[in-house]
Amino acid sequence: MAGKVTILLGQVVQFQDDPFAGPPEGAVRHDRRGAVAVAGGKILASGPADTVLATHPDARRIDHGDGLILPGFVDAHAHYPQTAMIASWGKRLIDWLNTYTFPEEMKFGDPAYAAEIAARYLDLLLANGTTTVASFCTIHPESVEALFQAAEARGMCVAAGKTCMDRNAPGGLRDTAQSAYDDSKALLTRWHGRGRAAYVITPRFSPTSSPEQLAALGALWAEHPDCLMQTHLSEQHEEIAWVRELFPEAQDYLDTYESHGLLGPGGLYGHAIHLEAREIDRLREVDASLIHCPTSNTFIGSGLFATMDHCRAGQRVGLATDTGGGSSFSMLRTMAAAYEVGQLRGTALHPAQLLWLATEGSARALRMDDRLGTLAPGSDADLVVLDLAATPAIAQRHAQAHDIWEAVFPTIMMGDDRSVAATYVQGRQVGGQT
Ligand code: GUN
Ligand code: ZN
Image: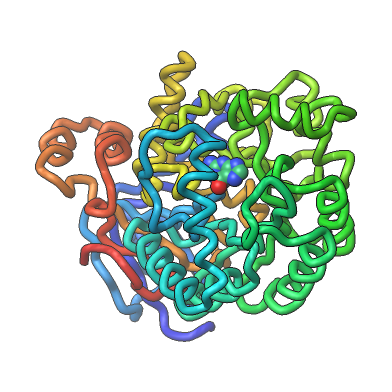
């Protein structure tokens, strides 16, 4: 037995199926009085409190009352270096990058600044119940070191990589095809699989990489197919038109990646809003992951991602803040935005589908659902406990709930870090209000 057993008591929601594959409520098991048993940083058991307590009668108990125990949230796409410039006003994507983002990212060659923001960012995540993130860094290897070191200090599973750009970015924020390959490889060798760290090969997007750089990173991915690869795809119409000019020989935006070895099963494609039929088919054929960033897509004015269509088709879809194009660190706010985007497309996402996207769906997109994003025995004990009546506005609505979905939906729509009663990483409480 792996160390002392602790049992967390509260309401428990667990997915037994993909809630997009059939009726969402049928995919869920809800224990009104439930429990999660934890030992040695792993989940031992989860289910009805009576059963779990009977199996471990001598365990230490932490009673979260009516709190809802879920797997910690998984943010499948973010830019931690954009923490300090989140909520910058008035620009669309390309102007927003040039005006706000690149000047801020320039600062990350300074290891002290990178360490300060990495620590601030991960503490904000934990306060918001997010226990895993896939983050872009900057072109500076120092920025990657800083994030992995901060994650290691907190015991968090973080996926991240050096953002590569060798054109259409200011001097001081450009590498080369060769240095992108060399630096990425050195960081990958140092960090991938060290503790809970996962290195992600990270070309920013086709406009900021020459064909030579895309090919170099494609070659690196071919050498390390167990690594994820993250980038951006078809976020705004102006960006897509620009890609067409820069790559006149490409069939479409996705082809600029595929023709350089950057399309595959471990590929994470952020935004993926304005896709052509061929791109949709190809992404599905290779079982790639699309990452939905709804607060970003409304904040920067990008468009409406087709969550229901992609999920029903069986595509891997992750949910993400896209900090700081996104306007919140909170996956609750992100679920609310995903609901609103769904409504604008005429498809109301069920609360079960929203919770699944923020946990198991994102973990599946990152191909980590064998170890996180669920309450399955053997999974890492990364957990969030939600107070479903955390503010007066939420509490008065919650008081009228007839079932778990009416009980949780006001927190999805109106909640933020005040709704996070506790966050656990590897079974150790590291954040939250209690
Ligand atoms: N496309 C390329 N870089 C970025 C970025 O930093 N944020 C967003 N939202 N889109 C991008
Ligand atoms: Zn992004």
